[in-house]
Length: 173
Image: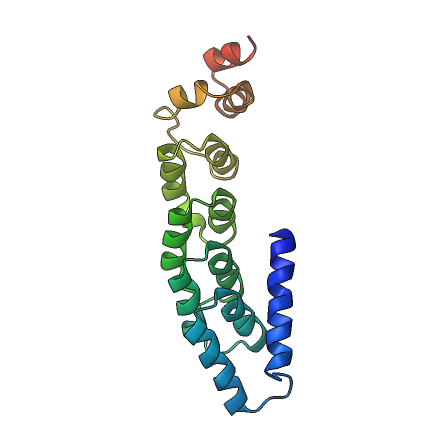
């Protein structure tokens, strides 16, 4: 998330200071929130919720409507009542593979089969193999030919995972 996150955080700090949100009245808080909603700003919506822990549905709506995968994921991490189905859908549409992996491993492990299918359909071998290391598949055979067509390091991973002598032989060539 890196430096972009910190510049986003700086925006929040400036907004926070400009609107005098430290020790503010409920009316000032509502005015700041109304401005965030009016501007449909996912960054400010996330930080507003993170700081005040208020108005989660309104802030989530801003984030989802803005189609911002990064802040949707971060919002889900902070809010145990987040709409995980909508956030998952947004992440899959964004094709942000590292966020999909983190979402599945940290928030929604029961959606790992959907993530496998997504990785296979999008031909994202790295995501597929990362998922495989975390969530063993009972039947890997539909995916084996595809994996064998990939770079050698994935073939080695597959050989280790399956312990199949034919795959081990191909990996050691």
